[in-house]
Image (spheres, rainbow over the protein chains, first blue to last red):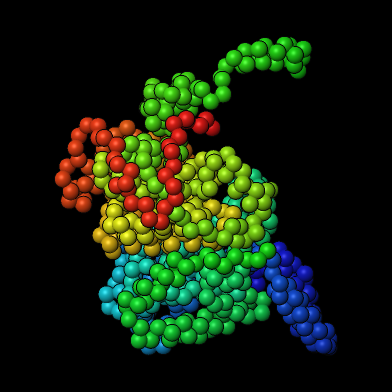
Amino acid sequence: MTTYLEFEKPLAEIEGKAEELRAMARNNAEMKVEKEAAALDKKAADLLRELYKDLSPWRKCLVARHPDRPHCKDYIEALFTEYTPLAGDRNFADDHAIMGGLARLDDLPVMVIGHEKGNDTKTRIERNFGMARPEGYRKAIRLMDLADRFGLPVITLIDTPGAYPGKGAEERGQAEAIARSTQKCLEIGVPLISVVIGEGGSGGAVAFATADRVAMLEHSVYSVISPEGCASILWKDAEKMREAADALKLTAQDLKKLGVIDRIIKEPSGGAQRNSAAAIASVGSELALMLAEFAGKKPADIIKERRRKYLDLGTKGLAA
Amino acid sequence: MNWISNYVRPKINSLFSRREVPDNLWTKCPECGTMLFHRELSENLNVCTNCDHHMNFTPRERFAALFDGGVFVEVKVPEPITDPLGFRDQKKYPDRLKAAQKATAEKEAMLVAEGEIGRTPIIAAAQDFSFMAGSMGMYVGNAIIAAAERAVKLKRPLVLFSAAGGARMQEGILSLMQMPRTTVAVELLREARLPYIVVLTHPTTGGVTASYAMLGDVHIAEPGALICFAGPRVIEQTIREKLPEGFQRAEYLLDHGMLDRVTHRRKMRDELVAILRMLTRQSPAVAGDLPAPKTDVAPIAVADTPVTPKTKVEKK
């Protein structure tokens, strides 16, 4: 069952009709519908391409949050072997919003860390919708530190609405945990590669997207604040999220122009949610390419170049 | 709606309100409502003389009170490109910037200076909440990097006074990128083994708390300051319950282990001097009043002309 987004309604109609025709034909052997159905299929495919050719920033937000999109767990299962989850921050708890552990990418041992949103009600609650608490960031710090000491590259998969705004999270130092995690990203002498696979939500994303190379999926977003949040503050009206999404320049395409990210990873037609396997495979090959750039690099140079990259960031604007 | 409420009351009100508050002379304490005369208030470092409520203190006022004899030299901050996104909400971002510059007579939301406190040379950076809520954009990022680089160059400690509503949304992702950028600045100080003291003032929130404000060697907060990542309103909406009294205030954070100290503004300077001199293994500071330092003591390499401190307290 495909979940259609609001703007995909015309597509749902066409695909529904094709499905109906085929269902009728199954009940009545004399009906010859394949020609009409195939025409409808083609029409649907054209419309899909058309819809996704030039998605508005707000529509990209909706696609990035699409429940059927492959999540961190799907990427880890498909791309890595011998995935061995490591749990806990050694202080308070294990945060299920953050997955992480040792794994092999094409036999190369790495540390993989990411936000996991869950894919049904039960797992979404368990994963807290991908919103981490301080324990999650402290677990990530611990894993990055471990990777650094044993010379393993770190791969982070970003997909979070943001850090969890809760009472306990604040009491246990949400801000400090995020700050320390960003700091750890800047201190490790191993390659750190980050891919935004869905939502890159503010500080919760920066905490481990402060990387040597940052890639984004074609229809993912990365922003300082959600369009709804921005609209309610600057427009005093949360319903102005479309305007806010436009103004925030949160798409992969704009971020590439601003020099904030290095690569855009193409998604299959109609977005990663329509063909998970293809999306996961392209992330896999891009990861291999980015990692290869660091072969034989000295830890001190990696650290130095990463810092330089961030110090120099922001010299490019978008010519309006 | 009748004759009494429409006509008589406004008239009576206007008759009385006219003599209520002469502009710029009196400030009402937002906490206890005491009327404070401007001279009395500025002499008390913008702290209410009745209830000790710490009010907004602009970087210039703060530096005038902090540095020996009120003498400091501004450190030049590299100018970023303005309005990188061409941002427009109900107003254009450049217009908002201009309005803030006009209202505060400052260029941006952070001031960096070098000088001496208790004869201890330091670099200080202070965030200006009255400038677009002190929000962290590229200029603030540049200011913190400039402060750290200057500190490393002169081998001096950095004292940073934070105050911000968070990141500057009008600079979008580039404001978010100031979190890693300012963290690099902290790393520079760390590597040079120079003390980095953060004084958290009201309010310090969002991406500012989640980067340089929580990475100090010592964290001191002013009493009552709101310090948080997510604001109380956002949390109440998320968890749908009332938050306890004093939640996310300085004293609460001290109890939860996020701060080293909560210190009254009047005692802040002496405390900073004591901590800095111990961390840099210098002899104890001389107690009592010190003569104003000779002006040629302060190095004036990459700096603007000294600024005469304002004594007048600007009323919001």
